[in-house]
Image (cartoon, rainbow, N blue to C red; front, side, top):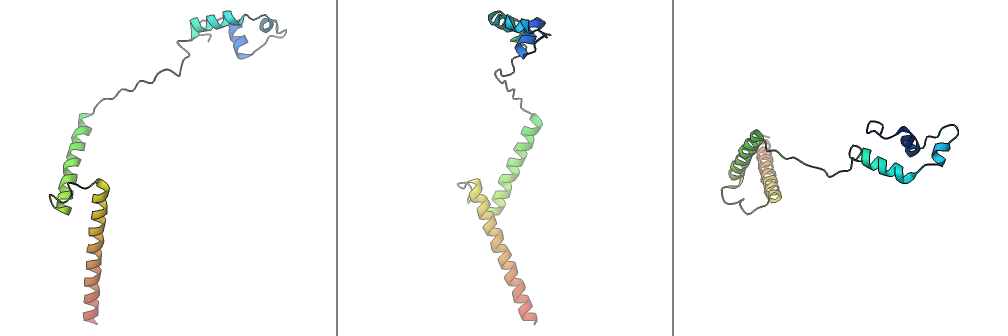
Length: 120
């Protein structure tokens, strides 16, 4: 408040400091203090102003995202075929991939069980 140019007496009254006799606080003109504070300090001491968000696009990140999206489409096409995944949500695609991986693991386990059974 002092940097804004507000009188030290007014600052002391606002923050509650009293001199030894306390006479300044007893005769404070609150309306004058308020108008002086508003005139001198309001602009510099307002933190709750409207938030401004600046969004800049990063061409490197956009290029990377585009490449990853292409890779994702190719990966899904390899997993499900070209037409099987178009109508599915991402969650459905993931669940389907998990099922396929689970089936593949079961097949591998059954093949290894068959091999151990025939070798004994």
